[in-house]
Length: 184
Length: 165
Image 1 (cartoon, one colour):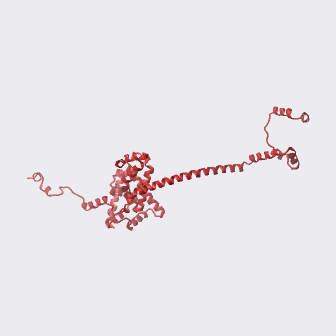
Image 2 (cartoon, one colour):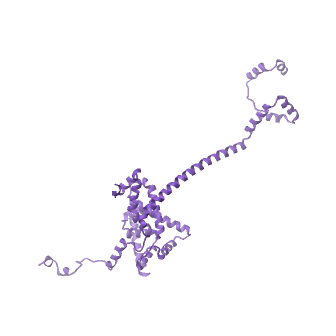
Image 3 (spheres, one colour):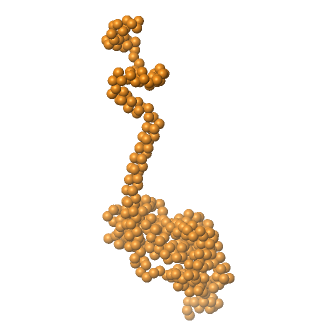
């Protein structure tokens, strides 16, 4: 019966009942695991880091979903949790390896070029490298808008940045990537 | 005659785009854009990764529940132990700072075991000043004048009272 639930609120209501909590949680994982994986993968680049971030995201969902209020959409809350997990992971890496703020993007680029779980052609590699030259938040905006086709209002709910600022950020990101692809 | 030839200008008919324009290089980019949104753009995952992800998440949650219970018990035990140490420490400090009450009780008990003669003999031998004796004396309850008179009347010998007058 639970498997036919598609509406997030229905799944959350089932989650809040003891007898259907686990089954509802499995439906949520199944529904969002790929979206969340690719979202965090584009932030952290490395597959193993993405795997950690995805698992930690869903563990946080399990622990906190009962407190979730219906004043925002579930998937924007989920994306917010996933984004924070991915960024926290990058922050820990910086601290652990004493990498300066600016150099983490260089490290991510090195990971990309190392070829671990990346088999894109030259053009794809160049595009991903260009995206990594963007500042962290701008990269987030670009990925969410370009790859995941999220609306600006949805990105606003996830990042807490105004729609106007997001539009400007995306516009600049596209220009920077174009410049990089032309000249590099 | 077809509809187009009767009512629409020849120039427009011959223009395949019908006046609509597209940005330069649009169709070249279009394929890339579609591919970007529908493929993984070079990123790959281990085989069957998504098939096993659900299980691994559930296992991690079960593990964290066991660890949480274990830590909760440990925290409680440490809290109880800490309380005992605090109470014991407090009592120790109290006894060190305020020993007189305890030693006073002890000395009182020891004195009670001695006979009056032994106490008098000790006082004769020991070189104690009146002040010393006064300080060591147990403070008695202050009695009223009537209570003293009653005591003397009931307990003291008549001759002794007369001597003191």
